[in-house]
Image (cartoon, rainbow, N blue to C red):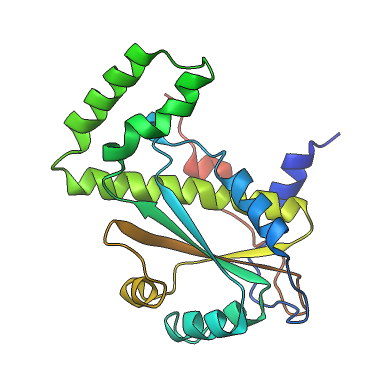
Length: 205
């Protein structure tokens, strides 16, 4: 018997057509983001931010900076998923709840903070790589959470990052990594397209 997660992965497709009459309430949006934040991050940085674009006015602004792709208007919500640069500076605070819960020892926090500072400070390439990794893991987690609730999803890389940052007031350390449309599927979407055979992309070592 196939596992439910396997079924989701095998049946998921990237939607381009949504029913514009369908809406998602803020409680559902909040729950999807809560689940997305259960994705892993290096050092438990939690270096991400989510903007839920769901009003007609905000959708119009987003459409203007993602090459007029109308799906951001028809989708119930489009998430702007950002990675945070320089997140190592807030690592101690990010880890404190784990200390309070008795999961992490304070001495480990000190060690991790030192390691993160040593590797990330003055290293913009690593900071950007880490921001992209974290935002991407969160996006995939959010995607599967939405699919499990019957929503169709579509990740988008076709947008103007500086335009998104300007229109939605992103801070200098907030990097828009990916957009994720979520809504009810409408006619015209392709099914999941065939992938390369595994033997072409897998090597054993």
